Length: 173
Image (cartoon, rainbow, N blue to C red; front, side):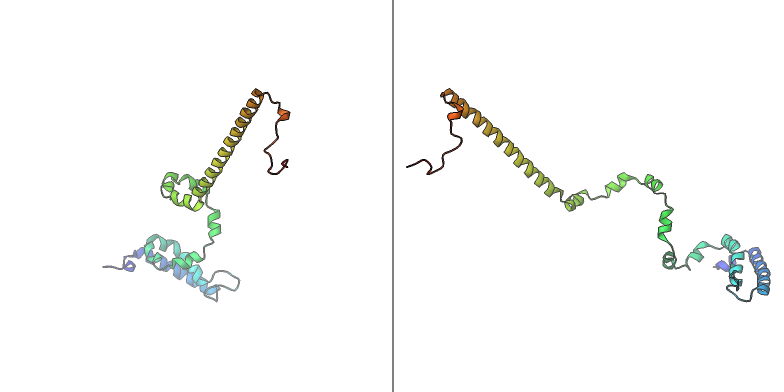
């Protein structure tokens, strides 16, 4: 079994080494430090890496590189707010199949958590009480109609009728 390094095309290796040699001698002459020059220009390592990166990316298996990357450390450097600011939410929502989402929703659990059964029971109880009160008022009105109807048949005038039931002990001797 051959390694990835052995499979690297010789012409690419030559091209890289020539570029690195040219860049190295040129940079070494003008830059005293390896990482950064005194005037904040990239140092020799940065300039060499920039020179060969494009060619290497064309020929190296990305999985070899990705296996060396600590994804958690990389994600710690990502500004998630900046990423989310670039997201087209409308386009994202257009891709969502709402029917599939709703299939996953536990409606019974939502109803339970919202207390809808209690609300329905309370509302039904209040409605029943209102209905009973309504019919009681209607029955009292009918009772009054019948009462005054009989009083009229008996020849009594309304102003002669008592206004309410007699109180115990009032008017007795």
